[in-house]
Length: 333
Image (tube, rainbow, N blue to C red; front, side, top):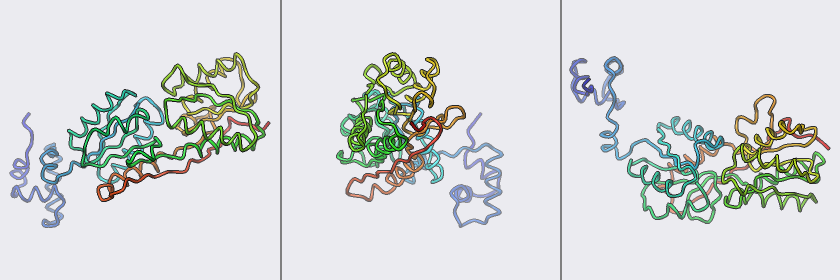
């Protein structure tokens, strides 16, 4: 079936090619009744605008690229949804690429988006090496890094204060009477995780609390599977902790599964906290207390940087305050 063109629309509508073009562009040079009639004909004939040709004329595509470290990661997938909502509200579409925590694939995906002439790229980094990994690309389009703390990288970035979030969690547990906690899932290869762990150490020192670490050495991802494995290892040889603070909500969900399988009651036997506030944590019979990364706020901040960064000479960072979300997984001791 031949593609319907503007000339086909003009012939059916009995107007000029220019009139159809004005109707499609929203020009005020034609009457509203004529515009509505032409647009109705476009719908009836299943006309699809040639976005490539239009972008060549306008020098913009109204498409933003996203390179994410993992589509399967619940927090990242929900953050991408928030970015898509924000982009759509502002007349943009999204092109999403998955790097799967692979730095070489991350470079290829970034290059692919540049080749597609997107108007800007949002990067959810695969690791602390991402900025250096992508710095070899000289690009005139704005690039914003989201969710990783990289204040000294000379780039635009948006992230929450991870250390402050960890301190918020520890302070809450201290207010419930906890004095010895397990921090589950510390991962040295991630700057975000290192900052969270440092926040835990600083808060425990300040509040006179003791922290035991259960590191995520064998799994490069903060997954439910890793959380279940690490929690089971701890339950086999407990060290007297009254609360578990997990580096991510995915780890906390895994720890909750391990507790259920091993007959450990939450919160009666041990309290449980997460970090991120992904949607699963709010489900009935789960109700994990957590530290929220406000995804929509992060998405809007990233979009703001994308749209104004071409006018800014100095790279800017936006730090967003984390929030405590109290549910039912923690109790007073």
